[in-house]
Structure formats: C-alpha cells, structure tokens
Amino acid sequence: MPPDRSPVPFLRESLRDRLVSLIATLERGLVERSHVVRLALLAALAGEHTLLVGPPGTAKSELARRLHLAFRNARYFERLLTRFSVPEELFGPLSIQALEQDRYERHTAGFLPDASIAFIDEVFKANSAILNALLTLLNEREFDNGAGRQRCPLISAIGATNEVPEDEVAEAFFDRFLLRVTVVPVSAEGFAELLGCDPSRAWQAPDEREALDAADLAALDAAAGQVTLPAEVTAMFAELRAHLAAADVYVSDRRWVKAARLLRIAAASEGRGTVLLWDLMLLPWCTAPDAPRQAVLGDWVCARLGVREAFAPPRVTRIVEAFEAQLQAERNANDLDYDESGRLRFSAGDLADEIGDAKGGAQALRLTHTRQRRYGPAHIGARTRQIDELVARLDAYVAELDARRRDLADYRARSLWLDVGLAERADESLAGTARVLADLRERIVAARAGFEGLPRLPAGEGGEVPAPVVHEPLSAA
Image 1 (cartoon, rainbow, N blue to C red):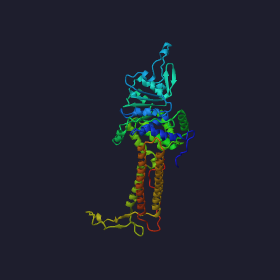
Image 2 (spheres, one colour; image 1 turned 135 degrees about the horizontal axis):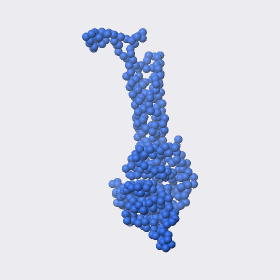
Image 3 (cartoon, one colour; image 1 turned 45 degrees about the vertical axis):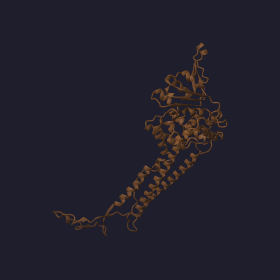
Image 4 (tube, rainbow, N blue to C red; image 1 turned 135 degrees about the vertical axis):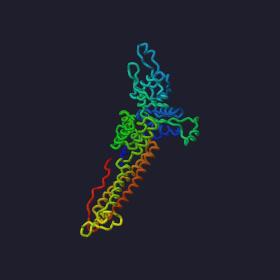
C-alpha cells in the first residue's frame, strides 16, 4: 500500500515553497555546508538546538548569523566562552537599582535571555554555574532572574565546540542539543570552489517574502500536531532503540520524544500528513553522540529501511540451503534391491574376489547391492509446490523492493532535509538486496529442477507425500 501523502491541515500552502527559497539563500556561498544548514534550520523550526562539533574556521558562526536572519524581527546573541567567562557576559549585568531595593536582578535586554537566535562558541568551556543556568534556559525557555522566572523568546541556540568533555554537568548540557552535527574542513574536491569564493561580495539576507515569522512557526507547530506516526515507523523506532541499547549508547526518553516531534515537523514542512520511513534518516544526528557512531548508525539505518527482516538475505539463504540439502539427501538416498517376487536379492559370489576370509566368510550369502531410491509424483509434487510458494513470495517481495526504490526516489525529489549520501546508500541497500534475492531465486529454481529430475517410481505408482522441508518462516514482518 503506498504511503499516505495527504497534506496536513492548517499549514500555509506557500510555506514549503518559501522554505525552498530560504534554504537556497542560507546555503549560498557556503561550500559543503548544505546539510549542516538544513539541519540547523529544521532544528529551529522544531524549537530545538544544534551543537556543531568541529575545528575553528569551518563556518559555524557564519551559519548561526545567517540562521538568525531567516526569522523576522529575531534578536541575535553571540558570545565566545572561556574558562574565565562570568554570568554577566551571557545573562546581563546586575541591576544597581534592584540591589538598592534588596533585589538580585539582572538587566537582560540585549543578552541571552532576550535573544531569539543565539550562538555560543566553545560552549563547554564555561564553568558549571553558567552551564547549570543554561540548562533551564535552553530546555524551559525560562531564566531565573532574582526571585522570579523570566520567559525567554529563544527559538533556537547553536552551540559550537571542538570536543565534548565527559563530566556530569557537561553530559546533561550535551543532552539539551537535539542535533549534534560534526563540521569538518572542506574536502579536496571542494577546495577549488572554496578558493573561488569572494569574501568581498556581501551575502544577501533573505528578503521579507522568504523570512519566517511567529505566525509561520505557529502554523507549522499546529500542522505537526496533526501528522501521524505509522506503525511501521514506530516499529523502526523501537528496533533502533534496542539496537542502540545493545551498543551501549544511552538515549533518554526525552530525546526520543523530541526526535519523533522533529520528524513530524519535517513532514509537516513538506506538506505531508504522515511521517515516512525515509524520515528516519534524520535520526543518526538525534541519537548517536559523535561522528563515528553516527556513521555506524547511518549504515544500520540505510541497511534496514524498506527491508523486511523476514526477507533478509541471510535468512532467505538459509532457507534455500535447506532445500538444497534436502535435494542432495534425496539424490544420495538408497533403497534395498528386491526381485520380481518382492524378496531381497542375495548372492554368494559377487564379492568373493574382493573379500578374502580364512574361515570362508567370502562364501556367505550377501546383499548384491543397494539401488538409488526412486520417488513418485506425490513426493515430487509436494517438493515443487513448496518451492513454487517460496518463489511466489520472493517475487512479490522483489516487486515490493522495487516499489520502495521508486518511493525513495520520489522522496528524494521532494525532501528539504534529506542527506543525499544516506539516500544513495539506502537506495543501494534496496538494490543490493534485490540482486541477492534474484541470485537466491535462481538457486531455488535450480533446486526445483533437481527435485523434478529425481529417479521416478514405475508408472502408476504414486508414492507417499513427504513432510515439508523445514525452514525459517517468511511470515514475520
């Protein structure tokens, strides 16, 4: 059944087209940063935060400054933290007037609690007092200012770091960033394009028609609330969770909920009423903590999407091998030799030349030989019917794989957020699975011909129906 692509209600029809134009504007002049730009924008649309991990000089701050201009009337805050940074640098100076009235309050205008988009460079170099204050601000959008809590208009924060330290406060803060994206220097292939960029040519900010406002974000949030999470997507979430747990990668329940909402936002922004399997290719950046484990998880996701475990090549291979082993056993099976009267044939001399015995054992009566077992139509028909059922199942599944590939191609043509490299690997996984199954189909068809070619009983003898060849089921989802 084709996936539900019905549009979601409440969403402005022009939003997707505006996002296409906005993304093109944000990417302009940034070499090999397309996917980073898109992930940061998607996180902002979902009201989530992005952590960029990488060396200096890789356009992390430039990306944040551009993202701020994607939202109308958004206030921007940027700060580089050091070991010596003090809370005043982020949250504003103490109010002298409030102190005179015995109140401990800060002037937050123009500082982080007043910002819509924030860029915090070297974020983990801050002391624990700053990080603890940031925890509440990033998660609840509130800042403890004196005796009360101040609501913050923060849409999204982008943090930047060279590395993530391992301590309790840092881990809690690390978990506040839903998307963790590694930014690396431009590759050798993109280096010439980088040198061709002209820094003197100012980048043009998005115009009023492209920039997003509060009404756009509210409409997108309402639309995302109507997006459904199909059973097959939920099952893949559960399978991924078990896979990560087996690999000792802890993902909090809060993170799973936020990741599911991010996929709903992605679907709604593209005008879809349901999350598709292919949206799960966004999950490596939401769940795995660093680039090596994200790469491993990306491989796993690409190998599993659209491929049903019941038809996994290793399982089908074992099934084919079960039939091949049964055929070999039946080809090599022997029967005792009977004469026309139904008695076993005996001979005292056939083996005399080969067997010598001082006590005359060579002259004892012996079975002349055994003969190859023969099979009737009932036996052979049972074997071929079982194989025909298996071949029909394989053919239907290969057709399903082909439909999945067409669906993925359609998704690639429309998706705003897809990583092209992952999409190519997912497509190759589907194609590779189909190729392996085609080879296995040839083997099982050859086994069928082998059963057809078994020695036959004389005409008129039907023989017995054998027990089916035992193999793993193909009924599992």
